[in-house]
Image: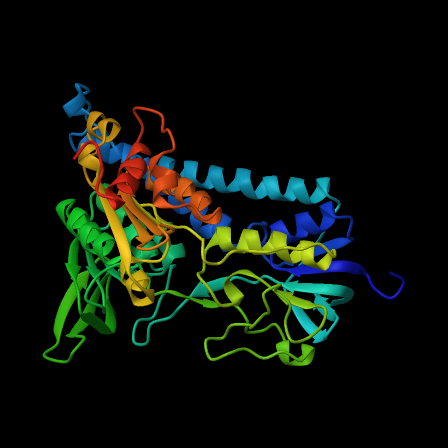
Length: 465
């Protein structure tokens, strides 16, 4: 250690970075984490996963009270929106959780190097004008919003915003246009629709939620449309002009054709995210990025340069906080001489709309490309708990190999799909068959019984349909 300041220096304190730092410290390694934000937690805790869920949860309550769901159960109220208070509870959630990470750093004796790190050599980075040498450096710098040519984001003006700006709107827009029908756009669009905005989603592809199972994509479109969301599919935005306090978008068919214009009070640009690799000085460390700006790693998260590792959104794979967390733990364990593994075939994904949308493993389309499959589906309207709770929308779908019966993928739309999918992921991690799930006793009445029934449906033996 005489030649090094640290055993492990993590660049970035998002879900991957802070978890990697904590695990490294737990394993007895002298650890530091470089972070330039005023608070720890990265995009997820500060302006992503956590604050968006706070707004989603609050807006669900508002809509339930205002839209009749409570009235159907004999509860009659007339809610009044206090948007500043709603924003306040969001900020409180963020403050509590980011402060919690700072506490964990102190508890585990992790040094927070306050500033943005830049490589000066393969084992040295500079943070706030000071050089630090580490035996191992983990790059965990996350991702940022992908810009859209012709549409300039200015969060301060609150007319054309990205996901960060959409969380800070001072008033409910009359008309919000969401560019991009992916997870983030649908979630934040749902928040403002529930609070009173007209929401139009413009998507370049022929369906929303690219990458998800085909049945899920179609059903989600139908449900969200029924809730009042409007969709312009197979459409691209080529230009956005801000005129006063409104934006005028130029839209064109994806396949070519006549352009049209669309006026909005707020435009949310949500077409994806890109790795944060600019400004790291990777060339000075002997590293380069691939065509997508990502850092390539081996299965143990090591890069081509010994002693430099990378995890999370800066490497290939889905840009998900829980993926980064698991990689952070595995990477730290590998550095410590243990065996850290992440099964990238079993990483669940969740869309926190209402109902929630979740999946793990292969889609039916992907599974069929690999061989013959069996599929079981069960509608939530036949699930006793969902029916009792007035939550009839959605279904569970189990995809299994036709010969071995091994579960290849599970997809569901349900009010608590994000929680339900954990069972499927754990079953798949242990190589479960559909029969294994079907013959596992599930508590009654629960939403999770729909997973059991869908598994039973794989062999054509569901009970309640």
